[in-house]
Amino acid sequence: MANNIKRFDPFGEIARFEPFRNFEDFFKEFRMMPSLRGAETEPRIRMDMSETDKAYMVKAEIPGVNKDDIKVSIEGNQVSISAEVRKEEEKKSGSMVHSERYYGQQYRSFTLAQEVDDAKAEAKYHDGILELTLPKKPGSGGKQLTVH
Image 1 (cartoon, rainbow, N blue to C red):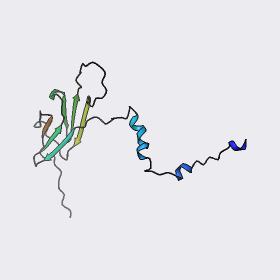
Image 2: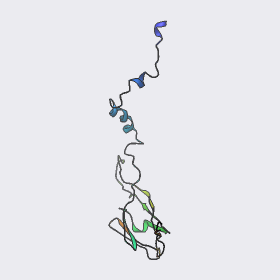
Image 3: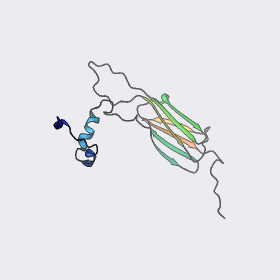
Image 4: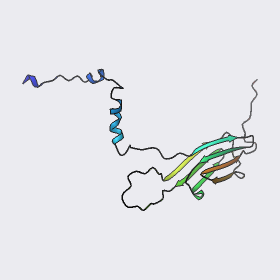
C-alpha cells in the first residue's frame, strides 16, 4: 500500500520551466477558441494633422461610411469625430463561415493646443477621407513668457 503514495513537488514544474521550448503549443489553445480567433478591436479612425499659424488641417480616414452618418463636434480646443458604420445585408444560401466586415460606431477625440473658431470650421468628405479645416480662434493662443 505504501507504493501508491507519490511525493508531490509543487515547484518542480517551475524549476524545469523552459519558456521557448513549447511556445507554439502554449498559444495553440488560444487560437482554437472561437471568441478570440480573429478578434480585433473595431476599426480605428486614422488621422493626419497639420498646422499653420491660422488653422489646423485634419485628414481622417473613414472608408465605407455615408457622409450623413459622420458627426463632428467642436468644444473649445476639443474635437470629436464619430461615424456610424453599417454592414450591408447579403442574401446568400448557406451560412457565413467568416466575415471581416465591421459595423457599429467609430469614435475619435483629440485636444488641440488652441481653441477652434467653430463658426469658421469646415468639413468635407470624399473618397473615404474626412477633411477638416479648423481655424484657430484669435487671441486664444498660448502666451510666451520671458524668463528673467
